[in-house]
Image (cartoon, rainbow, N blue to C red):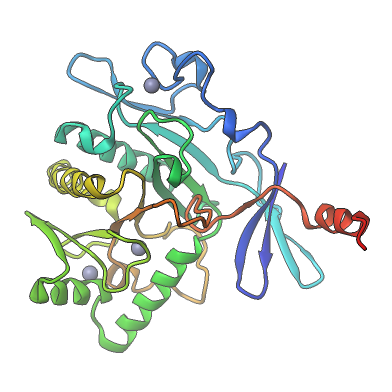
Length: 329
Ligand SMILES: [Zn+2]
Ligand SMILES: [Zn+2]
Ligand SMILES: [Zn+2]
């Protein structure tokens, strides 16, 4: 049982409680539940993308131990000045390939494109649910990045709130647009292309570069050159172009570090209620979707899960009780 509580001082939503089960024991002792032939060990698929032979190449299903639950209303309520709500959302796993021992970077470009098609399809579908303000797509590769099952997969999490980092991006890109009537990200791209010193690669309609102020060593951002606020609007040829750049960028990153997070930042659900005032009026012009690749190395210990959602298994009431009962002196 998990609930969401908002820290009023930072407006950060925290997930308090247990998902049930031990997340450290998700891989079956006798092998991998994501391999072909073992589909019965995961919940039934919500979507599959087949290869030319008809067998699945990409498979999406609800997470067995979801941090968010799809049923019910938000149940928003106050407790004095505090706000809480139920952890309504959707949490899905996308198995990226039937092959056990490969990484996303090791897949053929057309198979990377199939993974991106699955992201597009699931985002479009989840955004039909007006309870969900945002659909987060992310991937944790390697144990440093928090992945337990080694078989290549990613996560989709639809949430009633906007992740904190994305909210910051939305806020500052809107402010830039209000001041200059230009997209902040288009301006960044223009400067990066002009300066060239941080460019990693440019292919067709996409550019990959290391950001000016990266959080991690070898951090890379991938942007479409032509302005667009929603990843899920890309057509198949555009996804194929993105797949080629992404594969190449990930191959480069993997030469440096084996473990990384990959996060897709697309526009929030414009059909859901706005967060501040009329925030979506210029969203189409002020936000620019992109992918962030965030390599992880051993020395960075901060828990990074579901992009800025921290899972706290101990409720503060329980923590306080234990602290009160702790013998000291
Ligand atoms: Zn496997
Ligand atoms: Zn732009
Ligand atoms: Zn971003």
